[in-house]
Each structure stands twice: as C-alpha cells, then as structure tokens.
Image (cartoon, rainbow, N blue to C red; front, side):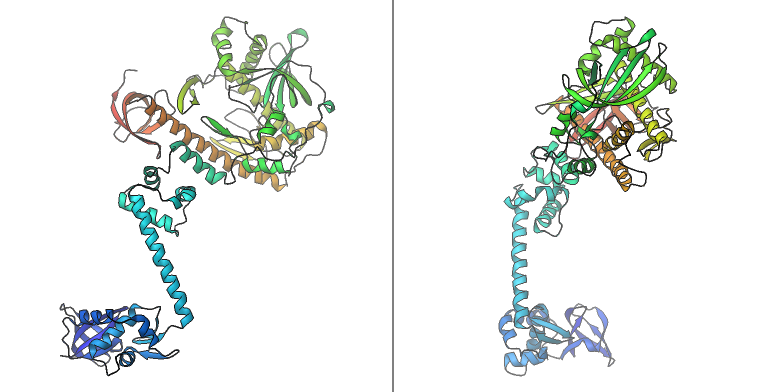
Length: 619
C-alpha cells in the first residue's frame, strides 16, 4: 500500500492512500480516520517503511540533526525542496525517513529556513538569522525570568523588581510586561485577585493607602505636595482697602483651615440691624491664567476624606486669605439691612478688610447655641445676641423660600475622627440652629450675588435644579430644591474653583470694572465642565473612603451583630454608621423597618462585608 507524508493546516502528517483521484486523495490515518486531501499537499509518497511508527522514527532522526550545520549546508539565496536538501545533507539519494526528517526539521525552525511554498524553503540570510536568534534568546530569558517571578509570587514572596512597579501593577498595568504576565499567571494559579495576592506578598502594608494611592495615581499623577510651589500671587496692600468697622466671627468645625466666611451683626436705629456676610477673597491675589490659577483650575476643588484633605490651593496661599482670628484679611462683603421684623430692606456689597474677632468652632458652640438655650433665652456664651438675631432672620428666610418645614430634623450627619489609625464616628442631627444660620446666610449670599451678576449682564456660573436634577450653566435659572430664583456658588472661593471664578466677576462688578470673563469665553465653559466631572469624582472618592472607615470601625469595635433600618428592597443602613449594605436574604419589609443583622467577612480591599438578616427589631 502506498503511503503519503503530507502537510495539512501547517502540520505534517502521514497516511495511506485509499483512492487516488489525481488532484485529490482519499487517505486513512494510522488511527483509522479517513479524510480527503489535495494532491498538491503531498510531500512524499512511499511504500516502505510501513506507515505505523513512521512519524516517530522520522522525528527521532530529525532530533539527531544539527540545525546550524543543516543551515550551513544550504546555498544562500536559493530555494530548495526538502528532498533536495536531504540529498545534500546525507550525500546520497535519501530514503523516505531521511526526507521526512529533513522536512520536519525545516518546518520546526522557521527562523533558519523561510517557507516559500508547500515543501519549498530558503535559508535565512545570516544577518536576519542572527537577529532572530538574538530575539529568541531574549524571549527565552524573559520566559525564564517570568517563570521565576511566578514561583516567587506563588510562594507569596515579592520579587525585588516589582517594588518600583507596584502602583502601575495595581492601578494601570501594562499587560505586555513580563511582570504583569507573571502576576496574572500566579493569580490564576492561586485563585487570588491581583491586590489580594500582592497583599499576601507584603506589597500592600496599608489597605487605606491602597485606596488613597489609587485615587492619587488616577487624579493627581504629579503628586499633591505644594510646599515648594512658587507663590506668584500678589496680595493687594490692605491700605488700599477700607477697614470694616464690624466685629466679625466665623463658624467652622475644629479641623477647618480654609475659613472662607465670617459674619457680623451691627445694630441700627429702631430695632433694625445690619448683617454682614464676609467672604475671603483669593481672587484678589490669584490672577486669571497665572500659575496659581492654572494650579487651582487643575484641582478644581478641595478633596475631603476622613482624616485628611487635599486642598485646591497651596497652603501658603490659604494662609494669606483664610479668615483666621486676630488677622486683618481682605473680604468681599455682602451687607443686608434688616428691619425689626427681619425683612431685608436693602443690600450692598463692598471690597474691604476685616479683623475676625473669633473663630467659633462647632463642637463647643453647639453645646451653647442650640434649641434648648434658644428656648430658655440663655446668653452666657460668645456672640449669643448676634447668633439669636441671625437665627430668627434665618427662620424668616427659610419660610420665605417655602422651606419652613423642618425636613432635616430626622437626618443625621456623620463625622470621622482618625487618631493614630483608630477611628471614631460621631453622629450629629442635621438642621440644628447653627446649621440653619450658616446655610441660610450662604443661600442668601449665593442667590443675591447671582442676581446681581445677572442684572448687570456679567457672566457667571449658576447651579439650578428642576425635576430633581441639578445642573450647572451660564444662565440663571430657578433652583427648586432651595426655592430661589437663581443660585451662583460664590461663598467658598478657596475650596471650589467655580466660586473663585464667580468671585472675580463680583469683584469687577463691585469695583465698576469690566468682567474678566464674558459668556463667549471658553474658559467659563471649560471650567464648568471640568468642575462638574471633578466634583462628582471627588464626592465618590469621599464616599468610598467613608465606607472604608466604617468597615474599619466595625473591625475595631469587634461588631458581629448590629441594628439596622430598611432603606428599600434588600438595602439596609447600619446603626451608628453611614453604611448602606445589601442583604440578598432580607425578607420583604417596608422601608423604615428596624432589623437586626449579623456582620461578617469584612474585606478592606474590596470594601465589602457579608450581612445576614437575624430578625425584626423592637427598636
């Protein structure tokens, strides 16, 4: 029986001919499989040796041939068949096994022998062969190195070369590097995620820093150090500005360093009084398109997270403008003349300097200024008279906005205090008298200054709300949630870039100068678009880090069971924490239902936990 040695789909095979149809053959393999092949694919026909064992014998013979010597036997720039080269190599007419061995070797070494057709080859030129061999050796060494990395990683040892690459491997890997390929292979073998495996290797000593550094890697690739930043700002000489004859105070939490706002209350005739809302003015020193302006335009907002913050402006600039007590600072002041029935009769704005008498702090002020002390008319604390007037005024303003119902009385705000890696979580009821005073004065200022910009035809960046959706635009529009006709953020120019832009426009308006920006200025559109994106990103990051510290608190306090309240469907909020958790096994319960849940499997890398329904709670 005639056998054939042939090529099919790039592989060399052997079979016996059942039918020969000239252009095609019906063949049967050694395993009995029948198939049809083209006659043009046949490299060799033979009767002996038998088909069974032929391929193995040919491969063994091919293994004994030195491929380098075979390449040297070839004439340069000449095509040849496998049978021709076999004759040259063996020095006689080759038998079928010898021809097959040469063909196998030619097919297995494409860098030595370039294929030119079925059964036809050409020796690679020397320079191309050397380059290919060098490349193959480089690949071999890389594979050897990669295999070594895999072994180390699977033994939970971090290769030294991985250390400078950790951020890239964790947050934005180059999947063509041998380090990533080794890491991916080790993860598959150990069934661990990349961060989990690297944590086991000691590469993530702090889960907090893992999340924090990811945020910096993605959004602050140049770092956040501003100590050496060039101070190219120019603070207007205080002698150029009038000095306000008011006794001002600020209200902030204990950690605030960017004190943007302060207040004053000045008695007038017949029981009326003048309220001063004084806003720090970095716009007087940070000129448009300056280095500092570009710096602020890149950051766009201060980033907040438990235990730290990333300020929009360098600390040196903040210290020049923050309204710290016992310092004269330039401000943009909005004055409200208020009748004895708390009706605003007149407003006007000034650029001036003030000296803040006291920086009141929330933690101590709230114990003195609250619903109880107001009801009992207690006045034995700083600025008690002024705060009572502002509170009564704020109640009037809230009612005028159509928001006189205390919708925030049941809402809770949370604050986090981090002390040497230990976290404390504090609850605070929203809508306390301090909250109302500060929020109503800020709402009034942002609405009033937004109106003044619009009335004067000066461009501004506004926030509006309709049908529950908040958006920003260059045109004033109602903010239904606040109940005002227009609203332009202007009260936090050290923390938000939008406020800094609006403050520049306001300073020009109050000074009688042309506005720095017009509605046709692309700067406004770009700043507005970039700010919205950054503000949403920063808020999401803050929520993620607050969730992280909630999980840390559960571990720290060894919490295994907790009370909770049903939010909707299978979502619950744990007691004492701003932590929303999904419980797939939660039965159908009405929102607001109090339940008891079990807490387990807290994962600080994934920021997840397992919560199980234990039963309804009596409350």
